Image (cartoon, rainbow, N blue to C red):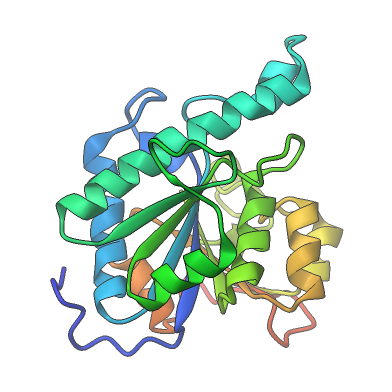
Length: 254
């Protein structure tokens, strides 16, 4: 990858990258795989060096899933707070990798923990972005019963991001699980209502409705293909775009 982002022509000035907890694990059996974290950090560095302001929201599902624990008779609020702490662990891992390769980074948390991160302050986050720092938002919204999908939509709107980049293990949104149905069609573009009506897994319904109400586009793409974040911010037609002006679902051309 380029070390300085030379030659890139970004179509976005400020984006929010949504990373699931599973993205940090890959083949590490639910832990944090250091090599994988560095692969993510390298991609972020390339677009940040090109002048794109990058904020991230990280999940914690590789370490703890609050909703699943609640089904085992744990109090849901307690389980969700534990999940928020798991996101902080992933955020610190990503921060460490980014700073090790020369990218200035700040972690902001919705739950105060001053020894390891800044508290979330919207104006401070925007200021960091304007100075070229990558900002990682952790601990969700600070409230139980809200997912990191909702956090991504909320923070993206608060900081004025032009799009949410939803990084996944597949190359877009399909009409069915492509791992179970090899003939499932991938969509190039979907309207928000298409996603809701079809029950497709893009963001949870609360987050999707928030994006729809504010016309914030969502781009779903495959994370671990080298250079894909760069391709998205340069406007290349990869993955699936949710939102925009399309009224009908458009299957991808084979």
